[in-house]
Image (tube, rainbow, N blue to C red; front, side):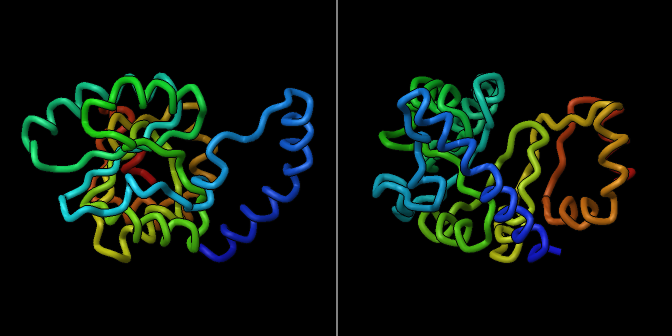
Length: 198
């Protein structure tokens, strides 16, 4: 399953590469954090012996919603190292601004969800736990973490009624992915019931 997913991901990336290059050329910009997305993280993110919690939030809204959880966990685990990933440039800017108090150089762009890339990132950061905000599903990241015994927690998860109709079509695949999470913390009873049905 994971091999097929990876092949489809590569095919999709190659298919869309001309679009990304064209947009970058039109706007005279490069894709931010390209090296980081391929697993080349800065020295500041290398494991330093402390217990590390990796938080992931896609964009601005998810990053802002992460703040209370980070504050509470920092009070409980003041000696732990916190690192933060995002996907969008705006989310990265917010993460840098809001989470710099937890250490310098502690933010990065989320890696492309290929097993070889994810293994490199996990080896570099060596997280004790990964917390993913909202319902972002990254099969290879979650699976590679599970193989290393790293608990992955989905926090503030949600599955709308409309999304659930599509999710159900992929239930056999998603069931295997969700079983690799240590905990699925959903926003409401309805969300919890939908993910339980998966």
